[in-house]
Image (cartoon, rainbow, N blue to C red; front, side, top):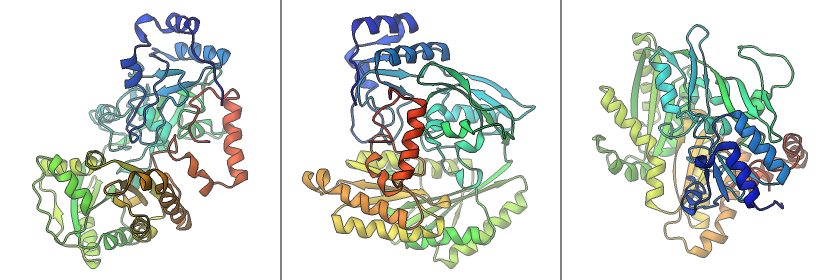
Length: 467
């Protein structure tokens, strides 16, 4: 793919659009905006601009189209698939100034939000009004709503409440040619034309720039009960998950952490004071919520019985909010702990939940074949297993040249089990070479055709999704 390099004239036009103080060409800023949380990749843009609204973004994209300059949308830079990396240089378009919660409509249970609102802050603003926005990815204390939209983020509560797409009613989007559109309507039912709203959610910033989102909200549940369930066998822990749902129970969260994930993360959580015996190989975090406390206690009793039938050790009920919070801190910091422990690659596999034990077993067997260690954790309630492959003792040659074959085997196993290669992290820059595993030629052509329809000049977030 061939693009024009930026010149002084383009830089001056960008300054005219967003102002001198929001146009950056210094090396420190370019370096900062040239990386996210994806391994150790660095792809700095040639300029960073920070527009204030959709009109300025429209002008930037019109300029980029005219001059054949690539544009990479950049949010909080918490992504794990390289979606915010400026692979071809060009313009790094930071959305951080679009950070307002425009309205929370209590009468219609809706909210209108700009893309740079931090997910946790939006959640808390809704909670103060007795309303609930459930999607809660592990990075929710720092990630932006716009990134959640771009990658259709989930999180622990997805097992009961669904993912980001399930709460989006309407989007304001700036198209690659600079046109500004709304994709739908602020209504719960809409059978008017193609569903452009859902097409945009999960499109990884390749089809348009989302500048406003209208979400539906639900009432906040009054009670939440949390259990920590230890197992000697990680596979048995995964088997127990499916049995809970087959019994007619729907927890609001079911999370899995194997032993290494626990050992690496516990030192990072100062207030986690729960002993983990040596024979324990994994933990499940199980949470139920609702408005009737008696019903929830009964559900916990049923879940405990099922867990014990699969070999669970002593089930711990969180005594108070502090203990509950420490358990969730442990889960949410696993990714950070793995990253600090070793060079790693994170794969985001997802399968039907009944197949989770086979996936976990297969990952370990493939690791043994190729000589890598894996640390696994994730949202087992919806079949989403995060496989962190750590370099450990692998040679540089094996890590750089042979590991991809092992990852391919993991993805082929995932597909064989009825799953796919990303549940919530997206394809981005790092997984695009594996798309042939899940898409045949006809399916791939349709995907590329959609991209070409929206962005015929290929200027928006190039180098992502498709090779």
